Image (cartoon, rainbow, N blue to C red; front, side, top):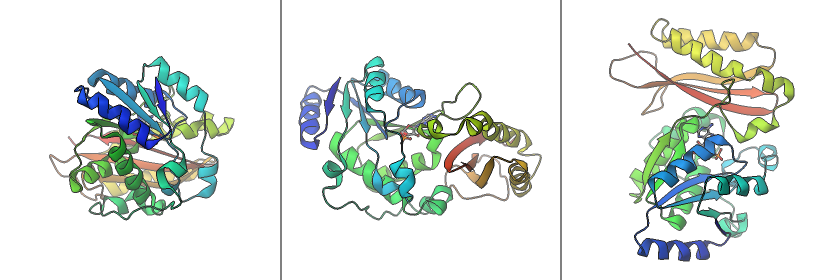
Length: 283
Ligand code: AMP
């Protein structure tokens, strides 16, 4: 695997690959890699000639300095995992390389997608995400980029970014990878206390129960039911649960036919914030 830390060097390498008509699949990450990331990389590898992964903990998408400072960094393990799935190229730039002296985001208009859910609770988050993903796309110029549905709102926002700026890249959303007990894989899981980690499957269990009740209970009633389950739980604090339209990400009060809905959740386990979501079926 080739490892680059400089924008100009990776650009130069990839431009020779493109001249040879090699297709490029790209997976942007913040490192501390797990099987969820690897599933995206394997897909990128399977569908393209070259798989490129970036590892960059993007400061402008964090509104909480402690969360940024404590974000897990496991560079040696990441390199070993990337080699185990035959990743071709790793881009591992410094903050200086990406932002020079000006560590700020651009402002984006994502047609309102940015004001829902994560956007309500993480100030400036999607401006930070838009800034880094657009920058990385300009450096890597991938044919296709792969994103997990674990961050479903982010996936929709990236699709909007590509549409608005007419970026020449295809965006693919991929399934959520879970631990055996159902907890959605996340780099932050390693920071959970033993007690919180053991209790954490409660989040997905509650989502699955909500999925069963969807269509029987109205969205607002179902939301109240989920809120009650978390109030009763001694270890978790619910930040939000909402049932939203997959396209607009707006909370729904009424279920219509031929629409796609999803339940979204954000939960504090001590000071670790976990998110998850599940597809709902209206029948
Ligand atoms: P991150 O390193 O958390 O920024 O994630 C990098 C990419 O991996 C994003 O597209 C995430 O949605 C995706 N990802 C993270 N966790 C999972 C998971 N459990 N299953 C599938 N994709 C994931």
